[in-house]
Length: 527
Image 1 (cartoon, rainbow, N blue to C red):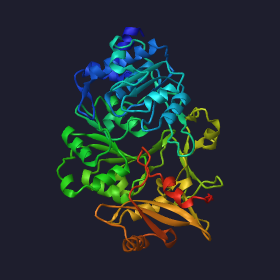
Image 2: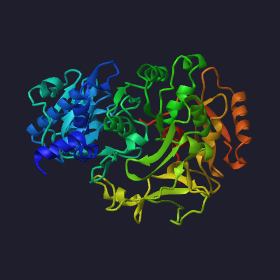
Image 3: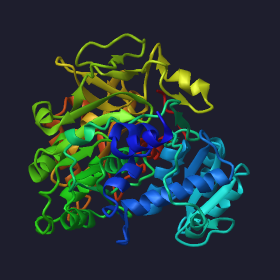
Image 4: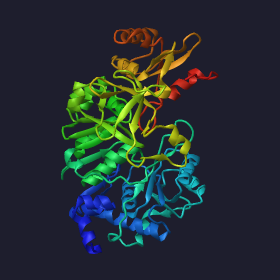
């Protein structure tokens, strides 16, 4: 096929465009004046503008000596330049690493060096950008948006001298995301083969010419990057960015922009549901056709309330940056199996293993293992030891625990490091939290194991109250009595503490280890 014919193919054929990273170029050809991205401050760019800047960025990076396969890092908040760099890496063959811009300069510098970034795109509001880049000698290009950063080129000025026409030799780029680093340094999750989007999925999930996607979480994180950025750009939808979580602002954005698609995490559900009824009633959410959620277990009580409010438009996923089979369950199926994250996939298997490596029977919890795809799937970048430690044969684990019921539906019970072992009995804290949160006064719960001289560990509930409720011995006893009505006696917390906030990761997961740590100061926890 000639270059001209190949170019014509990706301008009109979604599959050809996806295979070469030129999907946004295709949409720029088909709908140049359609709004592609709306920033938190209301700034908007069209698909034609997005595509032109992506082409300029490719030429800028090539001019700095980068070639396909080289690494590019983004240290930016939710703004249109993030999408422009993302689109450029998709078509230029570059390996993209988005970096959590809330990290310290040393933490950002570690990732820049570890991923071997040759270019970094930063932002003036991120004070750590300049100091971090100064510690990364391998950088050949440093570009900053939103103002000046010492040692960086201005974004608009840097792009101005390059041709905006479509590049004629696109190569599908890749990405390498970093784990959250709950123990030790974060590690890059590397899959050598770029993932080519299956374009037919957009129609299955209800995308059409009027679709509007809301990105309420950080675009640098795996789930918003995939479900908000990847899906909106793949479907030619308008992507609306929020800068940070604000419950009422989220409802206002859904109402004002007639949002049809969005990704949220369970804590966002809880905060939306905590809004006063009169506030919720001000905003029409009937435009929402597909609301996907995951990243952390969702208490069934919370999900029931969201389905009652938004309708049966919720779909829940269970997966990780490492890949694997992936579980998905829609609202209709979930209502028949409340609490499940989906049925065992048919293409790539999953299984539950006990501590001895034996497969667990139905309804018995153990560590969840996912089958690797042909060719071996992912590795932890520069960490073969960690890669092998996560594997049993051609299966790997992310450290999550759960069980399959008699019908093959998966239920999550927590993470292996979070399991409470009291008197030799395993207690899964997520199961306890799912009951405690049903109490009218409880906004959120993090059940942990605390030291006990006789039993090794004892179950403690750490509770965040809803507004209007005050901590007291009487309320603590009321919540514990409430738990006794639905939990077996050995799972009922023996004590309860109230807190004013619970630590969370950028993905919205409660960091149970940080909740537990103060209770174990000066003592070694036995696992």
